Image (cartoon, rainbow, N blue to C red; front, side, top):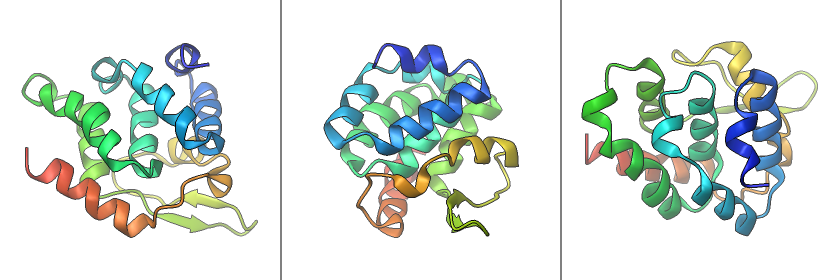
Length: 151
């Protein structure tokens, strides 16, 4: 399973599948997936960076987010700061994605200034079924602190 996540992230449909699967994985399986990701490479990819944003905004273990995800991104900040996808990963930690309930009663990410609506839609599949337990506001504050200091 962990080997397939990067390969799946070649299309928006793959992004939908990866985000949906990540939403329903248990914490220990999420950890295995995250540790296997080529984060630095994904941060500049047009589609794969969206999966990193989804992880940062849905993973309860913010220490793992800090050590595996954001550390690898922040190490490359000087090299890739001009890349819009890379900046979006940082933006999503400084201004975390908000969740709303749509007319059908499904949870989905709210529109924002740096991710297109169809991309947010792809990232929202099974968001309401997420195994995450941490309050979104607590996670948002922790993400902000992770990125704010080094920047």
